Each structure stands twice: as structure tokens, then as C-alpha cells.
Length: 211
Picture (spheres, rainbow, N blue to C red):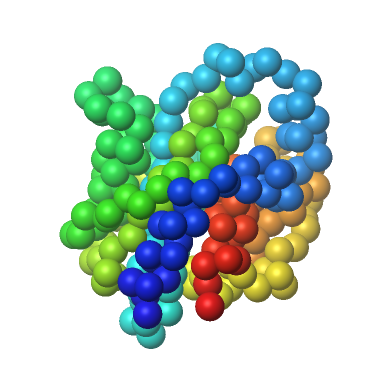
């Protein structure tokens, strides 16, 4: 059943993607206005993330997320996909995504990449993020990077597809700057921003894939 799901997903990823229309459903208004009226994204730093799908212990298809450590930076403590900026030794952005995945999760299985989603620009860090969709046939063993990752999160696809997991909140990403944003409720944690935008595009692709 899992492999059939993956085969359908791979096929759907070759079709025209939902793109920014799906992504902006999970973007806060200020971000949308900034992107609509700025050429800033022309001067970006290339980066990539890996979206890993796998069957959990209950054989439910799940997506891998990480909770980043708290640090003095823009993405401190956020729920995200494994990933980061491209390095000179990376042959391409897929290599970037896989390298960062192994560095951050210590997984003992190599994922198979089956497609891409639409790139997302992150103004605060000037990253242009290319999401790669991948899978493994069984849950890996993880040994996380203690300096980068607080926790590994397994989120079932059924929860992603459940409309009730989308909520709204007010956050303060920097002192004195508050914004209202939609987010995914992931086991009681707030998943917002670029990761939520990528997840929402994946959700749109999955709606025609998941039984």
C-alpha cells in the first residue's frame, strides 16, 4: 500500500504543481505583500530541504520534521524540514538536501528522491529554498545533531490532510514585531512560515494521491 501511494505521488509530482497559490494559503499577509512588491528575491542564497515520507511503526505514512535548537538566529526553535544552504562541494541542490538531511538527522537509510516542489523565498534569511520530496520503505534510525536539532517529529499524512490542524495565531518572531499567521498544529507545536507553505503545497499534491 505504501509503495502504491509513493508511485501515485511520484506521478503527480511530474504534473504542473499547485505552486505559490497553494503556498500563500499558509503565508501571513505581511509576507505576501513583501513578496508581491519586492525584487529582493533576485539576490538570494541557494538552499534546499528534504521532505521525507516513510511508514511509521503503525504503518501509517508519515512525514519527517525536525525541531531546531534555540539559538541566536532567525529560525531558532522552529519546526522545519532538514535542510540548509548550498555548499561549494555540493554537485547540485539535491545533494545539498541529502547532505543536510544526514548531518542533521544521522539517518541510517538513504532516501530516494522522487520529485520537487516549488521553490520558496525566505526574506529574513535571503534563502531561496528548493524542496525535494523523497521516501524510504521503512522508518530510519536517527542520531540527531545535538547542536542543531532538539527533536525528531513524525507527523502522519492523515493529520496533514485534516483541515482541523490548520489554525491561526499571533507570534513575535523578533522583539516588538508581532504578526498574525496561519499555522499547522503539529502535536501541539506551531509550524508556520516557509515550512508551512511548502507543506501546504505538498498537501495539495497529496489530496489527489492519498486514498
